[in-house]
Length: 217
Image (cartoon, rainbow, N blue to C red; front, side, top):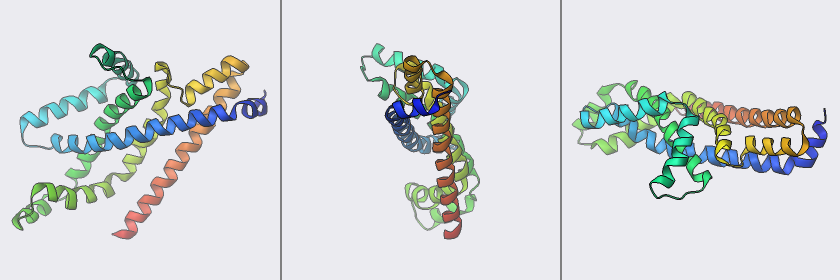
């Protein structure tokens, strides 16, 4: 084994790949959170024309493999006249995937909030948009934070699949290092340790936010 040689000769490539992994994951999670919030309100809506399409979206993106979703988005966009780089296609696919999972997380959080708060706010003349922003979303975020951290970790790990559409993130970087060094065990072990380190940082950050929210109550 030659871990020192693989790391010393290719640490720059590993760092660049890890940076791309973090970038794609952060953008996808952030955009998915915005879309998932809207979708979660659609899932609990009493209006069937809103609730049923929201449920169909959730079912498709939660019920099909993320690798298939990546390939569909990657090959579909050029067919409809959108020539986007692989990185953008990866972000779109991961965003649409995590939006469905986050919507279900948010839906559970919203249903945990006592409906009497909404009724009281309406009696005071507060409109539904303000109720969502001031009352529902802040409480919901406290309730769902652990599940949201887990979803973020899942997206970070699933981002390794975007290597199949030629995005040079950490997994594809490892494959390129293997093709040069012929040291698959060392290269993939280094990649695994980097993934582990990033996930541990996320877990610690999530725990810190949980303590902060708990202290603010």
